[in-house]
Length: 169
Image (cartoon, rainbow, N blue to C red; front, side, top):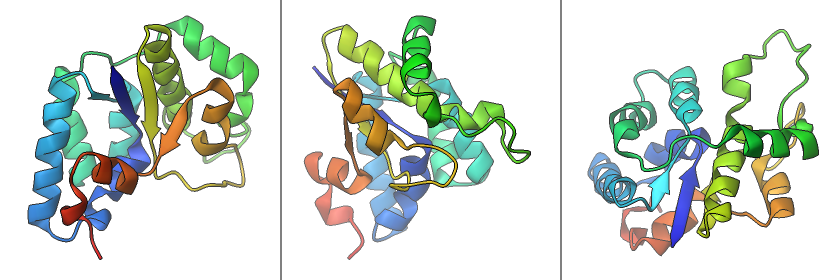
């Protein structure tokens, strides 16, 4: 089964990727259905990360409301350890005074959950709008493929789900 793991960057970007509020609602309905069917998920830390970005934003509100409907919501410690042992550069330097350890661990949790799903026999893909490069750490787009996990943009996911008509021009 194909399962998507969405990160906070994608959820926060949803409103800007859709043409109107009505289009955002249409996408959220499909995404909610996919969460309930086990086809879309996110680790618990994504909710916190969305809250960090915008506590009143659609991404946070949706993630918070949907969090209880996920079939998978956390990766085993073994998968988190595998990611951290092989690619600690997914986390920014802990000496950074602006670093919020709980929020900065989100990419590790997203990749670890995707790896956990893959180890269960699923085809796991990450949906991310994370910038392709960051000054203080590597990104999911550069690290996930090293584990055999593909990364799609939110737009690619929407097109694949038949939601292209809801994209902003």
